Image (cartoon, rainbow, N blue to C red; front, side, top):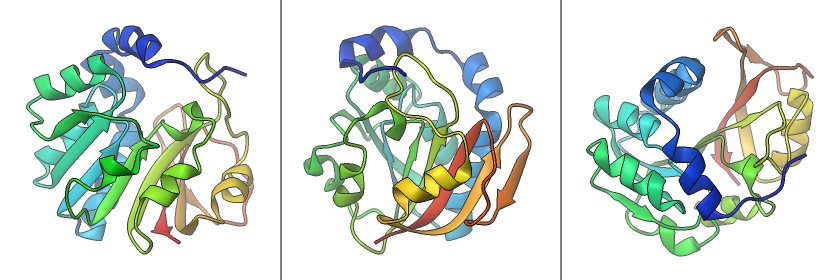
Length: 196
């Protein structure tokens, strides 16, 4: 199991990311998230822990206004270079980062598994607001947790989010929906719901 890493570690790690990396490895995940936001009729979204800004740009390209933040200077710069003007340096545990505008949905992909106190993020999102997030099934130097079955995801996050749907994103980029009571393995789990 990895450990919670510093923002300096992510400055180096994110600098190595490029469009080929995101366009391939994360294509199904990002497309699933964007489809979710469009299905909800989202107009203004906050991307929590935006990384390189690849998904943030995908969201804005669909006509949805997307603001974003990350605690890595490199990530903020990369996101800005993608043409995202509403991006800032900030920690996802700081409630001030959630107050820049009135958001109608929140998104966070591949972030919660990096943070020891990930459940505090749910406290920063207003009750009743839609939230879509993803978590992985594999270990990595920056992962403080990962999930081998969808039931583990439900067990950890159900007290904080009314889960509407869980989608399994497989390594071959296929996506399938599973019941909240199912226990299935996937490369990544996408959770859609409303914060309690």
